[in-house]
Length: 232
Ligand code: CA
Image 1 (cartoon, rainbow, N blue to C red):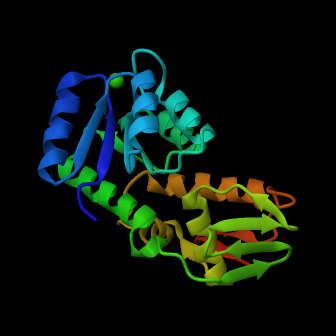
Image 2: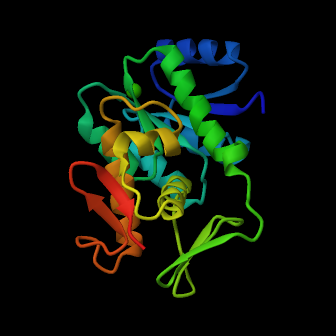
């Protein structure tokens, strides 16, 4: 796949122009929005493959943009751009449906690696459907062809990242994974400082959606000193 459309949502003109230049020379098609409203309008009309989202925007916060996009059913990867010390921003972004974040100042090479990993994951080989294949545990069923999950026959809404994480763990029962291993397998790049929180947030969402008692999970269990595993 080439020429994927990336939507850059960034109100600082110099930053946005630098990004546009760097990403265009990598072969991407770049759309730019300086405000949240403009970002929502472009997301609706141009259906970008991925959205780079600054948090501090003049008219609304990036969080609101993120929440609204997901509420409207848009599922493309969202990569949050956040300042170094704004830990809360990162967690909040993930809570609202973003897939990952990059800390400013970032190197363009790193950003591009993240973008490519997210695109591969969302649209590449790894996202290819598996005809008719299903995984089951308890009253939960994963439909790997349609990327849907049901519990007791009722649909459970998972984000693509949550689905991949669940699928990976369920496909490897009883095997403990470190957060680093999960980052590499699910997000598709080497982990770095801060990424562990990404795993924790997504894991908590999965538990809240699937476990009868998320505080004392039956299936998605914590392995002390290691990470997580699926316990059938
Ligand atoms: Ca800003």
